[in-house]
Length: 114
Image (cartoon, rainbow, N blue to C red; front, side, top):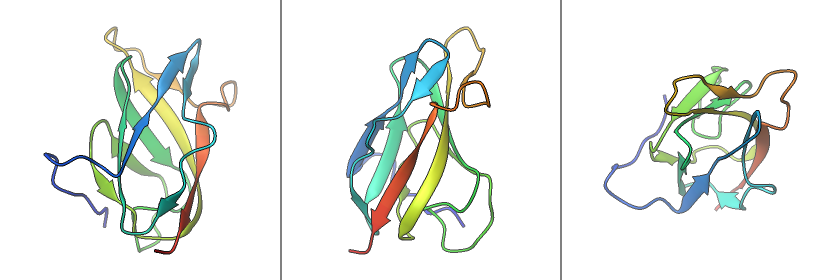
């Protein structure tokens, strides 16, 4: 199950996804993160959707294709390296982000034990 935190608090990691051309770009490198810390993804360009096609750093079980939605605060529960795909839906409603032609719209989360 996805681990979420109280939405009124500030996350340990406030990660901004930037819209650039046809890409939704995560910071490169992503910040160093540890199990137990919280994360929130946002963008000034629209609503963010993060997809973890393999395992997720926010789950202790093993389902794949997990999503984290815009401004949701989630808690890191698993250590390791996790590939993500980034998407932004700007006000015009046409989602931009990862696909085979836009592989830069993603990144790797490296999460260590506390």
